[in-house]
Image 1 (cartoon, rainbow, N blue to C red):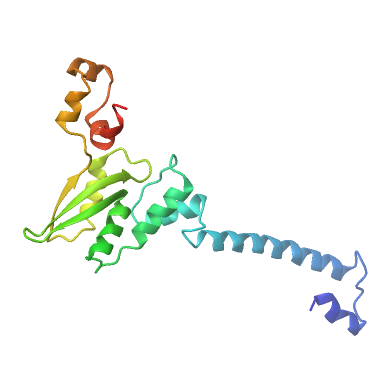
Image 2 (cartoon, one colour):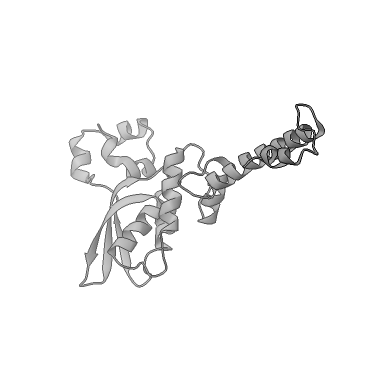
Length: 190
């Protein structure tokens, strides 16, 4: 029910346009409109799935991620959600897969029960990570400390490299770094 409809029956207020009450109600509307906008922004930024701008940056900081302006908002949200999904007792296969995603790596896990170790077979880096060492160090903070972990970051072998007929001089001319070789070796010769 509107304020006007509640005051009108009293017949003690001048409720016509440009009356004092009308001006007061207009002032309230301006304040409430600003409040609705601000609350809408708070509601939007309260959830990782809808956060943008500074709200998304705060969610990223909360889970230890630095700002990645070159990464899409969807990828940034996904990475923050992966990080938030890690729980202290997630040392099962699904929990470790979530940890790998949270570190910025899509990968499969091969469990080796005989020597109590894991083999992490990389599929793809998530986002704009260019430093595999930072992904690995982030991952080691989330995997069970009692298990050794070995990384398989690609399928490029020396035989495949030799088959390309690229000499070391030609390789140097391509100006690839070893990091390029580590992260995207399978794409360098296509």
